[in-house]
Image (cartoon, rainbow, N blue to C red; front, top):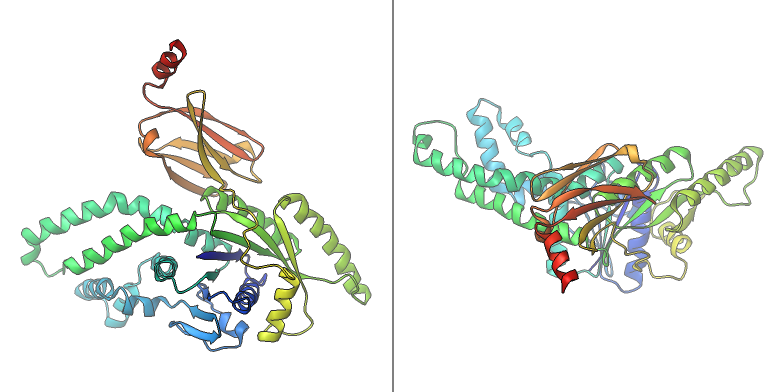
Length: 401
């Protein structure tokens, strides 16, 4: 299943590009799903179709969905919602407020990511296109499997033991409700599925991100930061869509000045992002809504090419071994040496800081308990070096042999 994720600053036209791509894919015969995970949905407006929290068939080969976390909690995680609501009520919180507070931080992200898993397992779609919220929320969405796994691995076992102990001792003597086995089972399902979601998102052969921006300074700067942080979380950025480009034959002095300004920004884009594939959508004179306008946008962006094509599939993160030293290579574009921090976590992980983001990287089994020798930085790549226990002795043995 091909997954295309559109990301970018608010207002650059991600939704229009996602909808246009979805329509083109459906016309080419791909069974296509386009899903909005932005709380301020506009996908239905763009497609000129009324959408809901249930999957809607827009036309042949094209389905669409606007994620609604309240609907998801009621239909898929009702045991968790009911428990948290009951707990809040036991503490004197009013009924309506208790239900609202039952939506835990991060549940929107988990719901969106589990739809990806559902579509993958179901096999009913060839292409899934995701229209994301503005950049900051998208980074939280795509990094959520890493962050949640880190917390769940450490806290879930402890929570299970505490609940079992409480049921056997004070559980019968206190008014505070304890989570049922069904609640604990739902939490365990979330824990188990999140690792699968992480693998799907990091499958660079099938899952890629396309960054949407306008030829203006603020969107360019934000896109550069976004590209850096997506690499940190090992997500493959394959191309840029430069939207709202003014055509070269614009009339009027004001528009010509804007065109000159745009040319400067286009040079900035190419200087910053080459050799990424860059595609363009010109500013339409009509409201970008409905089938005809979306199809016109798709033609501008893709021409005669297939929108499902993977333009780049190199993973930003990889491990290799050279002369007995194991190395982690991580692409970190647009950063200087002083912007990067590196720390050892436990024996199983390292912590990398890049700009305003921090990621805990789980090490492969072969590097558990390995000594971290240090790091090098150059050509927009961080290289972290490790030596496994007994590696020196093994290398000497090979040389002697």
